[in-house]
Image 1 (cartoon, rainbow, N blue to C red):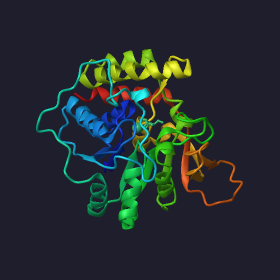
Image 2 (image 1 turned 120 degrees about the vertical axis):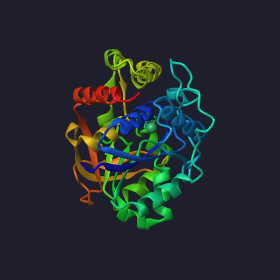
Image 3 (image 1 turned 90 degrees about the horizontal axis):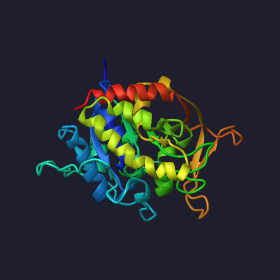
Length: 315
Ligand code: RIB
Ligand code: CA
């Protein structure tokens, strides 16, 4: 079986951590590298967190690159209220890094460009944070478009409310200019927004079921989710928390879990009130060329069965 070559661009981040572990575990995916961006936390923290996640599962071989520390136009907005001061606060023990486990010297944007150009087959870009690194790569060397198979991003909200403002999802709110560069690139783009990720929710029974794998990765998952759940339970007054980012990875190796529709999407860049809103022409009223496959449905039960099995394969 030919593996799908991917770059995971992320802002770990609790759900990013699960996406990283899922990408590493799944045998249909060839994870060429992890690139980090400012988002859930500062870039200093997101890159450190990526090192910690790979170290925890004894995969220090996965190269990690640092990218943009702020959006293209706006100042960085972070989400410590969700992910804690470090961006990866946990109920478990702190992770100590080997002193030789470091971030690569190459900038993330240059890694994305080089990897696309050098690859013998088109690659998948899987951003689960603000789209700044992806947009900067496309601006710096537009020729890489021919070497990108698909961009599958976590972000946006088509038919549901936002989560950082009433109209905007966090990743797109942070860098709306980058989102439009990606949407208008002409590359195949799939949006894994809140419509679908709010149907893929962890609760105590799922956390405990995965923890019963009783390996480091699954116990780490449980420790992370127990911290992460407290914010969501308080905000949504429910005992469930949306597991956003791993949906991007699951879509890569199991499309059948998800359903969506190809429509036209643009992002509000300027408005104080609706900055970052993904304006999704679901009914095609403006008769514009569809530019994005917007996912809205998921088979959550099967997703979590797969996640449990995949995490059991790690250390
Ligand atoms: O809105 C949720 C998204 O923003 C997730 O990717 C989360 O990790 C944060 O980056
Ligand atoms: Ca993220």
